[in-house]
Image 1 (tube, helix red, strand yellow):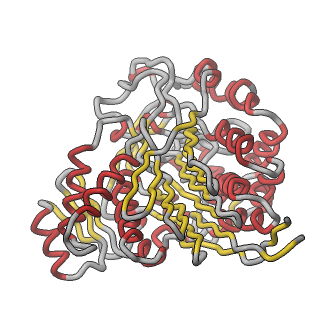
Image 2: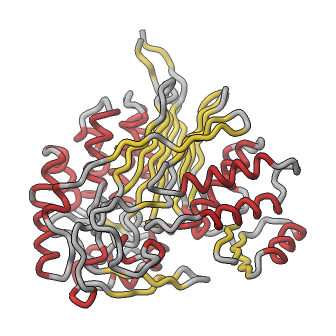
Image 3: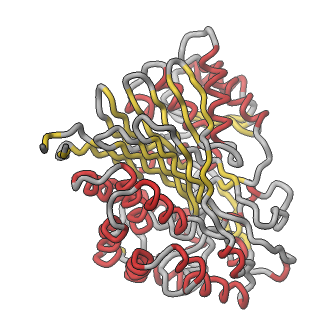
Length: 481
């Protein structure tokens, strides 16, 4: 018997990314089919934030089953070399109110986990052929699409990378708003990936091409780095807070730990909800507890999906800022995780050989008696405050849209960045108790991009306007018994 099913929903960092997932849901795919289709589409539509050459995490919360996390983040190379012999150099990214330095070059790249993640997600959770799930991404890469304001802004921030050599300039040099962009090389790569097995990427042409370039052009990656890569399955960090089970990313990453620490403190206080002093104190305690892991913190995108059965998929992925080199014949750049100062607190080239790099990224599920929510965010080290504030508001009665659209602040290193929207008393409190304060003139991508879906008594999808996120609810779903 076929009948109308409950709607499914998706929220993602680009309307075309969300649309790819929606098409899969409409055709009867589950949440994990949809999130995988969206992830591959994001390689095309969000190429400076999401890439085959990066890594990520999926928090899977199947209905009435225990959640788990698939960690397909990046591994550090097995061998280090003297920095003087490497292709490794600084550039500045202009974020408007802030200038941030990071390093790029072949030697900034780590072993990418995304290809292994694609196959592991597909094998463990999906119901549709991989080539079918990649079809929207492949079509968009061949036919092209129009660059929106968000992607144009990212390209301006990363302009020094996109102008660093002719190959990169040719592929990414004209990402101005309103221009058409296509990547047929990436389409060919995705088609081949879907025909082959996971071994093709790590043992065949892509790995061989990367290693050859690194051998002759000052990089660190070698064949054994790729051959040793494995996806890790982990038990999520978990806390029961105000009648809800909150599941998030566990160690070795520590973003989830810090988010739960803040939530527990803030929700245990007797003051009225949304007391700015309580929220600030929670952030200060998290700042004191922050461990000095190597962490990747920038260039992230998030996808959330819920299907007709109530299965939740929460996926966050990153490519750092990209390393400035296109992989020959593949149409994407590798990450630059080893070139970010905040993941190298003891100096560059001091990482543990072969170690899984930790991350602030924290795909999360919030499950209550009558609702199931998947959410996550990009936003560098602001992820821990962005998700703390958003989840705290959800636990204290805000709707999904209210929680995501509410103004945010972020405290770190005795400095507070504050969005507009706080009242005079709240703003004055932060000014008094934070040492240094930067008042931003508008809601900004600096404060993350929470993309979230909720099912239960209502179905809701919300993409964060700070990053031009897109939320779609698909009412055209049918269910077969």
